[in-house]
Image 1 (cartoon, one colour):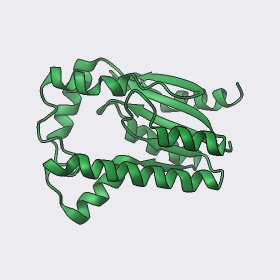
Image 2 (cartoon, rainbow, N blue to C red):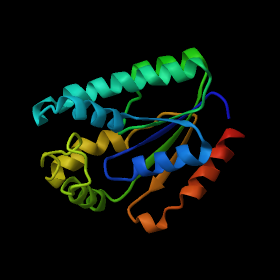
Image 3 (tube, one colour):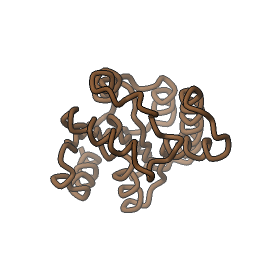
Image 4 (tube, rainbow, N blue to C red):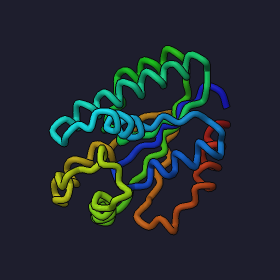
Length: 185
């Protein structure tokens, strides 16, 4: 499994990070997690909510930098984020420059269920303070509109959609089988 970029995408609250960590452990492949970088930045700077987009942008810049460094060494990479509907130009350029195959795992589900899960998670003490939305996504209509581009993400040689409306019906190992099978197509 050389020169494969696995994008774990979808709207917030769909279980992307948990799956990406599981996948990285199972496949023993490098994981770039934009939100983890944002947490590290927050831990050092303790920025306020008004600066979250600026530091989110910095986390993306660092993510793309790390992605390119790994691509230069032909490693398979797992990159988890809530990508918007179009693939960022910088990522397209890197995929073409280094000749990578792209598999997207798109986490999706019933928006009302996902929204409720997101709001509940946002209020827990386990949620990193650098990732808390401070209530800006608690309005359902706003959440639905703001996350639509994440649901529309459509980039890759293979796209595997995972419905996480009910986590008990999701098998990470079955998703991994689909990933491995897509490599032989």
